[in-house]
Amino acid sequence: MTGTQTLERPVAAAPGKTEHFDVLIVGAGISGIGAAYHLTQQCPGTSFVVLEGLDNYGGTWRMHRYPGVRSDSDLYTFGYRFKPWTGTPIATAEEILTYMGEVIDENDLARHIRYRHKILSASWSSKDKRWTIEARRTGTDEAVHITANFLWMCQGYYRHSEGYTPEWADMDKFRGQIIHPQTWPEDLDYKGKKVVVIGSGATAATLVPAIAGDCAHVTLLQRSPTYFIPGRNANELADQLRMLKVDEAWIHEITRRKVLHDQAEFARRSFEEPEAVRQELLAAVGMFLPKEEVDKNFTPRYRPWQQRVAFVPDGDIFQGIASGKASVVTDEIDRFTEKGILLKSGKELEADIIITATGFNLSVLGDIDFEVDGKPLDFSQTVTYRGMMFTGVPNMVWVFGYFRASWTLRVDLLGDFVCRMLKHMKEKGAEKVTVALRPEDKDMPLLPWIDAENFNPGYLMRGMHLLPKRGDKPEWQHTQDYWHEKDELPEIDLDEASFVYE
Image (cartoon, rainbow, N blue to C red; front, side, top):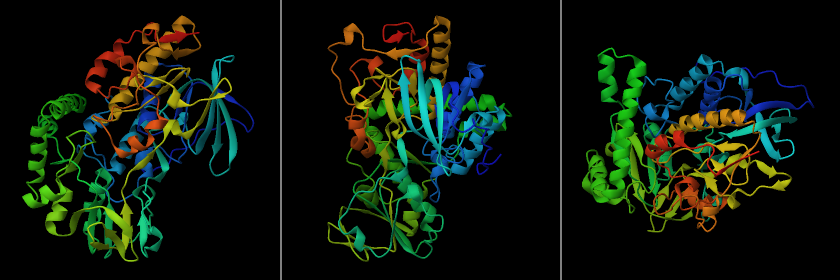
C-alpha cells in the first residue's frame, strides 16, 4: 500500500438505522490508527468503529500538501512502538502515510474505518449509559446515528479546515495571491516568482528551502526568531546496527530508547542550563551562516523550549540562505501594499505571492457539540485528569500528545490506559466511569490548561480559554512529561478515589 491509496469504506448501516459499538474512535490520523491497533491487540472481541471526516486516513499528513511537508521530530519516537521505522529520522508526509497504511493493512484495520463521516454532535445519556453520535456523510449529506459505550477522541487539536492568518491592514490591496499552507492550492505556480513567507516556525522552515530553487527569490519574514536544531537526517546508531545485521525490531527499540534519553537530557538542560543550551543551538546555526546573520535573525528572545524546537534536516533552510536563493527579514508588518508588504522599519518587501505560515486555530475536541444528559458541555468549566479525561464527562478519553517529545508517544501510553480501563470496567460490571475531584481537592486552585511560563506557542495562547482547567496536583494536570508518564500511567490505580463507577 502507498500513502496515496484510498481504502474501501466498510458497509455502513441502512439509512435511518442506529448502529451500536462498544467503542467509537474519532479520527483516522496517527492517533486514531494507533488506538484501533491497541483495541484489536489488547481488547479482542471489542466492537469498535473509526469515524473520519476526510476521504482517507492520515489526518494532518493527508491535509497538509504544501511543498516539502515533513515531520519536525524523529520517526523513531514519532512512529509507533509496535511498528519499526526503517527510514530516515525526519520523514516526508508520503513516507508517514505509507507507514500508517502498512499498520492498517498488517492489522486488518480497514474494515473498522468509515471515511467521509463528519461528526456534528455527541450526547451522553446517564439513563442509557451510552453516547449518541450524529454525523453527516460528506458528499451525500446523509444523516448517520451511532451509539457507543465509550468515546476515544483522536481527532487532533487544531482545525483542519482553515489556518490562522492575522488581520493586517490593507490586505485587500495586495494584487498578488495570499496563501496559507494549510489550504495550499494544488495548481499554485511559484516558479520565477517573488515569494514572501510570513512566519518563523517549522512550517516556514520547511517551505522556504522546498520552494527556494524554483522562485525568483523567497524571503522569510519573521516578527522574532525561533530556535532550530540543524543536523544530518540520519541516525548513526541505527545505521551502525543495520550494518551489523541487527533485527529491525531491535534497531527500532534501541534507537528509540537512545533518542528518548537524549530528548530528556535536552529538556532537562533547557530548564537547568538555558544559557548553555542557547549557545549550543546558536553555534549549530553558525556552522552555516555568518555571526551577523545569526545574531540578527536567528537569536530568539526567549529561552529554549518555551516554544517547540524543530529539527532542520541537513540545515536546508540555512543552506538556502547561504546560497542567496533565500533571505530572512526580522521586522513587523505595518500594512500590505499593492506590491507586497510595508514594514514598520519603512522597508517594502515586493512579492507576487505571500504565504502566511502563521500557525493554526485550536480545535477543542473536534468542534463537536457535546451534551451530557441534555445540558451543553463547556469543556473550559471542567478540570482535566492527566490531560486525558475531564470532570463530569463520562466514558471518554482524549489523546493529546507531547510538545517536548513526539506526539505519538502518548498514543501508545493512552492505548494501554484505555484498554486497561475497559477491561477493568468489564470486571467490575460498571457501565460508566467519570473522574471527580476528591475531598482533598476541594480547595485546590484551578489554573489554565498549560503553564504559559514554560510553554507558550501562539495557538495555545489564543485558545487557552477554550480548554479545561488544571489543578496544582499531578493527577489534575497535563504534565507534558513523557519520561515520568511512561512509568506513572501504567501504575494508576483504577480504583482510586478520582474514578467514580456506576
